Image 1 (cartoon, one colour):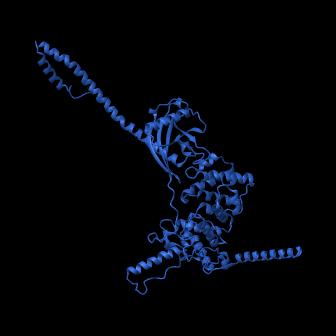
Image 2: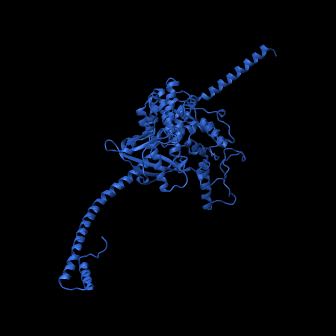
Length: 553
């Protein structure tokens, strides 16, 4: 074949492929209206759009059922959704940059953190830094301070770094696509990029977070390890199949809302689920309950001893989405999803000291040191702390703290100044931390720090500083001990006053006793010759009458 003929054939092949791709796009964009949806427009899903999996049991092979599920879920969401500040912003903000920024902030805050906890932080954050330019201009210390108590502190740092990158490298414009969000913003992964893209930018993509994993695994009876690569990809394929092209952001939020409020981890409310008819897990549990009920009522004849079972996976034990473990009737819905056993958290004990001095204005001040810029609780402030290794008796702990504070303050301290306060337990995602707390009160001349990244803060400044929840727990424990000590001192005052009065009374009695002895001897001598025995007997009698033998004073 000549060169010109090969070029002609190649051009014809390219043209044919282009026409096929165009027809595919047109077919996917074809719209249809579904009865009962009040005029809402939906995407007509074709079989070509549904990704293949080991068994149709784990997918949605019927396009009509997909359209029905979308309609039922969105109708429920419109009626039941919670009013949240980031949702309001996404629905009302016309500036796409501010809208994207606001959703980005919310998604980062919501990682591993409950909605109720995030709301106040989000409102305060957006009030202080309403645009990405405002956040970029802030200091990291201010960001850490705002984030304090929210946990997973590296998230705030990455938000700050991302804002600075947007301003310096992207001319202040946040990426406009899921792929751009994923590649250009630090700390933004697959889910976060999909959530921001669908909610803020209207990008048609599914979003798979923990709640969605649980909903999809139960809907399609996916019992394999939900963290495995095969299951992860299958779930993303399902999410992309189900997402509504007209309302991708609302659909993804509806799935999350359903997982958070109805299809919950421990007590799912199946009777309130708007998409219950589509749920394989519920159907299986319901069938098992019917079988058990009929057996108990004795209504099963020998001829019909086995009820027809629910549709099941037909892959013959080779399916990567089916559980390797048998169905557990006691677990019911909780058979899905299956997760691997969690690795037990690392156990640590940390020696901590609350160091107190009298401030210039007479107010107590507390010594804090800053953690390294990388690692756990990066850049936050804490009381002077040292990691404990092995068994450490209390005396050894005081020696260790004394040596560390001598180094920090450049002064001589003695171990007897340190007072044991108690222990505080704080659980991180991967660490079971116990803080062994001591305290020490310094004289004015002992309180000049000799190291960098250390500062003295009064009570109000400490409460506003960038400190972790663990530090707040430690201070609360110290505060309660300090309050008890003050109460004990107040309670001891009347006892001390009473003791002084009693001591004065006893001193007076002793003086009387001291003058009684020579008087007794004098009386005996005046009466003439008196034997020593009779003199001793008489003295003991008089001493007893004066109370001289009532015990040691």
